[in-house]
Amino acid sequence: MSFKGLQPLLYGGREVWPLIEGGKGVSATNHASSGAWAAADGIGTVSAVNADSYDAEGKIVPQVYDQLTRLERHQQLVRFAIDGAVEQVRRAHDISGGRGAININVLWEMGGAQPVLEGVLERTRGLVAGVTCGAGMPYRLSEIAARHNVHYLPIVSSGRAFRALWKRAYSKVPHLLAAVVYEDPWLAGGHNGLSNAEDPLQPEDPFPRVKALREVMRAEGISDEVPIVMAGGVWFLREWEDWIDNPELGRIAFQFGTRPLLTEESPIPQGWKDRLRELEPGDVLLHRFSPTGFYSSAVRNPFLRMLEARSERQIPYSRVAAGEHTVQLDAGVKGKNFWVTPRDLDRARSWAGQGYTEALKTPDDTLVFVGPQERATIRQDQADCMGCLSHCGFSSWKDHDDYTTGRLADPRSFCIQKTLQDIAHGGPVDDNLMFAGHSAYRFKQDPFYSNNFTPTVKQLVDRILTGD
Image (cartoon, rainbow, N blue to C red):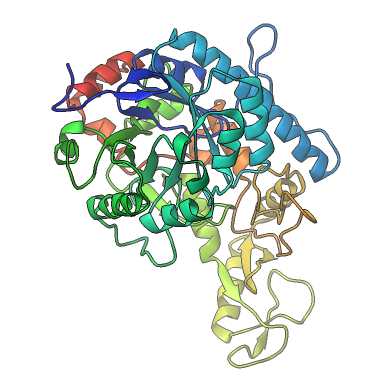
């Protein structure tokens, strides 16, 4: 039995529940969770973002980047990514027992996204039903899907974004468009597509936004049977009752990103699972520290607070005396051509007195003040860059042309590859980026998880199907 009116979808040649496991990058979703989700007759999603490979004994192969140049390390990264994702897909397919469906998820803005996607699909023919892809404008997703005869499910956060993708590319491959994922920028975890026209502090109700997306799809001749997948903030299906079988919205499916983190099969370490049970409303922060330049949502743990504090120790400067910049800076910098306001000179001296003795230049003609150890870590992480993004604000890497963004590396950001690999493989949850959706506080409130209960994926899917 399923919650009121929830009907299976025909996808990849078989009937599946319209329940999709959100694909969480860098080893937070793997074969164990996605294979089990498919085995429960849903759509499991293997993350193809720097996925893990295994040695002959089944141990995870550490991704060590020992090449001298960034470009060589980037090529290593692409090889690791393809090998890992192929292994994850094969294992997920075995676990699924031929039930449900397996999708893969990539970020368009990850370094080498196209060769990784091509490489994985080439080696997993018949195992992958579709590709979900967001974080950027994945124009080439449809042509790659067509080459490998798999479905594609673009992730967008507005009807306008989908219209641009459709007009430019997707209209040429309409038959493989399996669904459009609407990822709510104020509710979803990880990176999201908040545009400059939208206020991060003013969440908008998703219903009119999804309705507008459906209107765009109808205007382009796309059938109402092509589902819109609601992603972000979905916990109890009963809270979305008026979305199901709603003629204004057409066919709707639901994506669960945060809830599957706390299952037996979820690959995240126990410390991360334990922390999820303690979160309160407001503990997830929509922030702009990501080196992608996108907004993203993560738990406001000591790591994120450290980045917030670092950015607060920041002052603008000029190369010459101009306007209010009438005094020379004598703290944190060598040389005399840093002109600041008298008030900022006092602040800089105060920070230096607290041990923040190193001033680092940002691309915005400001200086941030950090301690010597923090400076050493930032510089080392920038030097170790392996090109995990197509454009990285933190290291100034770009994955094509001349391999640089042409901008100064930004010390207010961080190496996202390093921190996500660390937290996913048992590193301290306080010292790393900890992605989560804004509903994560509900683990503490939902009686399903009381007495430290951790469900299997099957138990979770069965629970979701009751409406809870």
